[in-house]
Amino acid sequence: MERFEQQLEKYAELVVKMGINVQPGQTLVVTASLEEAPFVRKVVKQAYEVGAKDVYVDWIDDEVRRIRLQDAPFESLKEVQPWKVSGFEQMAEEGAGFLSVYAPNPDLLNDVDGERFATAHRAGQTAMHKFREYIQNDRVSWSVVSVATEPWAKSLFPGEEINIAMEKLWDLIFMATRVSEDNPVAAWQAHIQDLQARLEYLNTNKFKKLHYKAPGTDLTIELPAGHKWLGGGAKTTGGVFFLPNMPTEEVFTVPLKTGVNGVVSSTKPLDFGGKLIENFSLTFENGRIVDVKAEQGYETLKSLVESDEGSHYLGEVALVPHDSPISNAGVVFKNTLFDENASNHIAIGSAYPTCLEGGEAMSRDELEKLGVNSSVTHEDFMIGSQHMDIDAETADGQRVPLFRNGNWV
Image 1 (cartoon, rainbow, N blue to C red):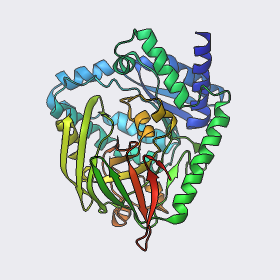
Image 2 (image 1 turned 90 degrees about the vertical axis):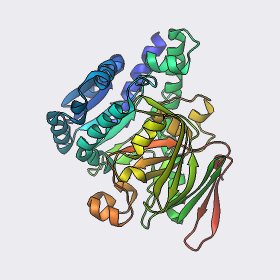
Image 3 (image 1 turned 45 degrees about the vertical axis):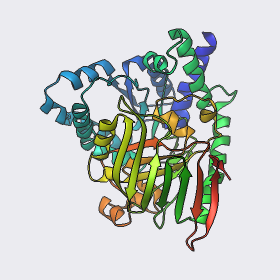
């Protein structure tokens, strides 16, 4: 127990000092569920110790959320309280940092009607669209992390006693976030340097297209002129370095909105707001999703694709080797933050303007003209495996092997 508490303290310190990189006088906003309270309290303490002006915690009760989705009047699911929307926008405008402690219960909404879920999700995403522009343009520091919760641990290790399941999950989280290292900060710095080498190669070559081949996948993704590969850490427009995701193993960029063709199959389940989608595939023509199939969660997937016009297109393409720490753990986490860092993935919906040269200073209309997708949603799903090959295509049509058998060439 003493060792666990020490690691938890190290984790909270890492999140505050490297994840968000809280600055003296800055406000920190934390979004978390009630089950995550013990960890959140440690984050709050660490934030004040490094000089935070204030820490605001936006608590979520998963059971209350489920009850609302099941029992509230249908029309009320279309509404989001304007005071909450304006509050987040104001805090972003004032330069707050935003931490999301993300540990979904994969089974939470299994019994919730799909239409009710889709209606509430669409309303929330639409209402917070302006706030998300602060995030996607890196105008503020932001980070997403996870902690072990009993519902999540039970879902991953159903045959274990809960204390054993929780211990196993915490060990995996500490491994993936490098908290179990003697010097987590030094381990993160070395990891970021490794990702930078990948970025340098991709950004120097400025490939025109990516060709994916794997069981159930035959996909071509064109990249727009002026695209940039990003990964590891980021900097706010004010120059503050932060880690958007902990863990992170990816390098990513923006696809050309109308340049995606072929079929792609998922390789891991997608937890979409508490509803699980499994064994699904999407077919693209000129960028647009024209066919959707799923063995489980078809209606949920369909509602995701139909969130708005932009959700019929892709907003992100990310490369992650199969031979990576999270993948080698051999666990399907049912948590996108972890699963996307064990697998090549792509995202339905909105693109990150920062992945285009000068994109953070452009309007949505300007970005759209350059082939950068806009949507109220952004949802990553996993497509990589040890069977995936990827070729990059140069501007003059030459193919260069990028991945073989799931790993970098």
